[in-house]
Image 1 (cartoon, one colour):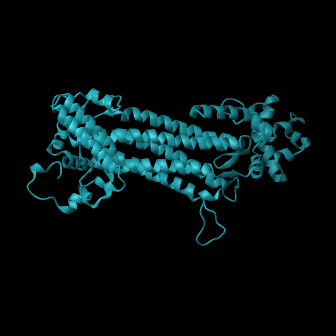
Image 2 (cartoon, rainbow, N blue to C red):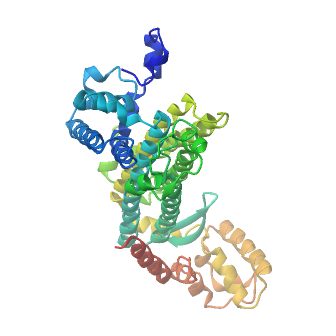
Image 3 (spheres, rainbow, N blue to C red):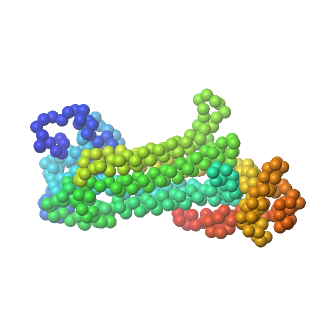
Length: 460
């Protein structure tokens, strides 16, 4: 039995019924819906709308449904295949268990505020779960950073070698990104955690249920202030998907960096067998499929964000069935982000740094040119003139086929009399790294402080 048949005398077209049904995916809301239904029953009893005995009977019936669906495969039974949605499923099972009293649960409630409260409860729990998964990915970044705490590699701009950095500094950059992602999710949770139940279909309810009491029982921070808005808006889902899209963008960037670093051309890292695959044709191949999938799956979440914005942009107040389309986008966003975070944590725990190659690359191709310019600045030359002098030295070194630290003092003095023997200490790899000791820099002592700060942030 559906929840709306009284107005109709004809049968629903079977193809439309299948098109209209959502139980195959919205059943993920069932535990959240049962939780809200139990509070709805208690609120009706407290308001005197139902006798206390009936409210208790409803609560007991809902608990029995919860116990039933805990049985593996229960929701997959063939007799439930034609169920319209999770809400009609709960009502049908409730009536089967306790009789006609089950129909009283929907007093003063619409499916509109019912789905809204179930979705908010569900998403609140998922945000909390994702936060833990994201924390584990951050822990994996810290673990790898500690393992190679003093190991250098080249830093890049425009994918061209720029200056030496520590691998730990590189990894902590992504820690910072994920920390902002966690902060964004915590912030959106504030707007998710508001109770819409008691708003009815669009205008409120004629029954005196205590909405603030219901909010307290369900752990909400407050109640919605406008019934039209409560049942029809999905900006909290859009905001969540936006946060997820930003997090996926960060994971995709990290994946891209690691893919590049694992190529034979770069050769800075080696991917473990646990996170790579081979070629069906070429026996020598070891492909970074784990990282490529993370990079590719970011597009799914970007698409869901665009879909959600497009879905909501032209809807008149209040509820429209278009909003049924929010569920699959929301669920897939949750799954994709969670899975990508887990895979990235696994990748980070199965990486080995090629220390020698990364270190050699860190000081080659004139990555210490800026340090040489800074050397002249400390000798009293204006930076813009120092920049020009070092540019000319780099051209000369390229012509000679030498690195800057392979030039002689006499060769350098052809370009400036300010050069002295101490210039070679100033442009060593150790000096280049150690000089960046200001807050946020790549100097070993600064990176160690940031590692400790990161661990304190996670409580480890």
